[in-house]
Image (tube, rainbow, N blue to C red; front, top):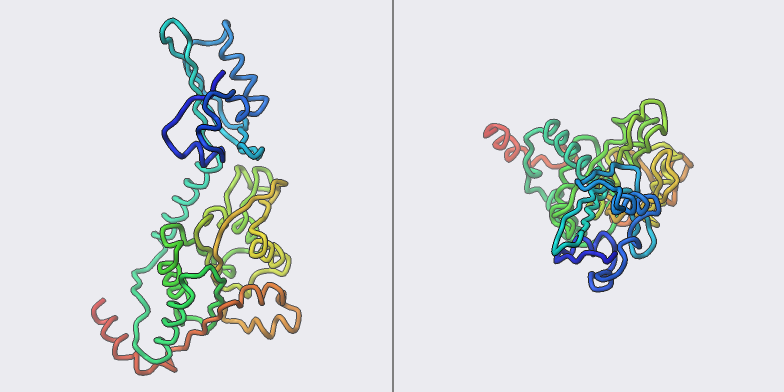
Length: 306
């Protein structure tokens, strides 16, 4: 059974091979054994003549041997007296990623306040924006330091908006706002049944941010056991979902923020020193407003206009 041709580059990206390497060959090389059996039964004389939908629970194979979950639709048509069979595969995880990203962005919009750019023209703020300009075009990890309310999230958004990843998602997580026993699931996702209440598979923030940026606010509140897993993502780009055994790979840039003295905490052992040094590649310290008094008139004008 020859594989169908396609003018789209999407199948090449999904199956990690060029079209000319697949056209004319057996499509079974891209299907799991179980899915092949379903297709063979559908193509038999006793098989149905109408299209069928094969739900989740089956898999497909990429050219490099990696498997991934799919759902499928099989259909049959007559052409010149011969049966022509068509197989449509849908990447379940990609659909879940897009659905999760859509829900996440809806929550972001509902929870966001009307906020402009960082307001001010003081020397301290100009130094911060110069640092943003220098680091934005790189993939270096950035550690944003400063007191609560100094605008660390606004600076993180400015870095992302000026980076080569600006067309991809910026996914944020406030590590202090999530119960400690749920932070791992929020970061890395979980499989169905991984714990009480895990009624379906959930993709974590890192999967949602693949090819984009993750901003971890209040990083100093991250539990020690999760710091090792975050370090692995920084070093290897790998993790496992809670309750899962398959290693996932992502390409993300990490921005982090804290109002804690992580250098001191790394010295006393309450924060992993290796993680601190990996995140502290390009530190940016934001000055508090009391050190930017010349910005007060501009801020007053901004709030009056609002």
